[in-house]
Length: 90
Image (cartoon, rainbow, N blue to C red; front, side, top):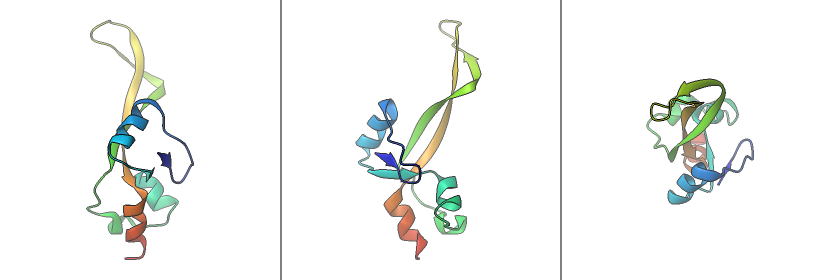
C-alpha cells in the first residue's frame, strides 16, 4: 500500500482502507496527470480506489463535541495504479 509516484507507504486509517480494497499501489489524479503524463481526458470515468484523509498543518476547526481545536481533515481520492497505467497506452 504505497503511493506509486512518491514511494510513501500509507499508515493508520489510510492503510486499513487501502487493505480493504486490496490496492497495492495508488496515485492521485494530479499525480497521474502531472507525473505519469496521462492526459486528463483519458482518465475520465475511471473508478476511484478509495477516499483517504490527511490533516492540515495550518488550518484548524473546532470539534463540536469537545470545543477543542483540532487539525482540519482534508479528503482526497486515490486510484489503483494498474487502472491508471492501462489507460496510458489506450
